[in-house]
Amino acid sequence: MYKKELTEEYILSEIKKLRYTYGLNKVIRYNQARDEKYQTQSVAEHIANMIFLAFYFKKYEDPENKLNFGKVIKIILMHDMGEIETGDVIAVSKNIQDAEAEKLAIQKVKINSPDFVAEEIENLFEEYKNTNTPEGQYAKAIDRFEGQLFWIDREGVEMCKDVCTNAGLDINITQVKLIKDIFELLDRFGFKTIAKFLEVVNTEKYKYGIFKEDLNTL
Image (cartoon, rainbow, N blue to C red; front, side, top):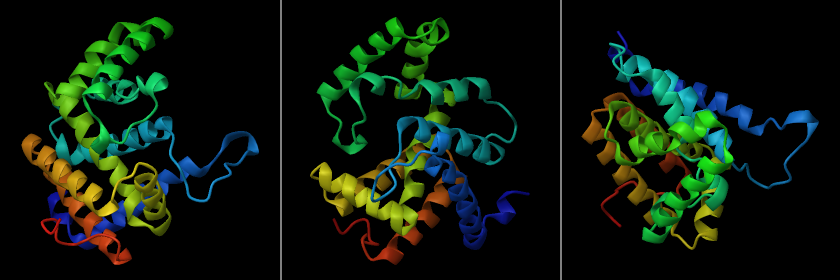
């Protein structure tokens, strides 16, 4: 049933609906507001977006309900908790030192968090990092795809340009590396529907004249 719907037109309409749910990222509680030129994203907002996407793609990628979906949600909730200590580092910029800092951060999170976090965060983080379980693989795929939905409207593209500039990265080189890595991961784990959605996201990107369409030109 679902595969018959996956035309480019249908996928684009669904992407727009998913982007609508990202609207919660802009709603600041208690009638407050962020003073920023382009929308930013907190780690907590990233996690909330991932949960939306995990539920959305489940009907395509886990139609037989083989995943322990409760564990998927827990992995998503905890996969970035080390960033309470380290802050966020752009994925393409991470190095060995960042990996070591991440390990130390997990230990600090264990010490300072409630029991339910302290008891599970190490194992759940390892499942996410090493993708050695179906749940870890699904959470990692959702994580990699989630950020791409920021790249398909003008505000999101401008935010991504600022991120790359501030990190001393070329936006074209960065997006080429990201896309190749994401497609490789999706292919390795067999997440074909997410891959089809990513193809449409890429098509939308080129409308802004910022990204090179041929990923092999860089």
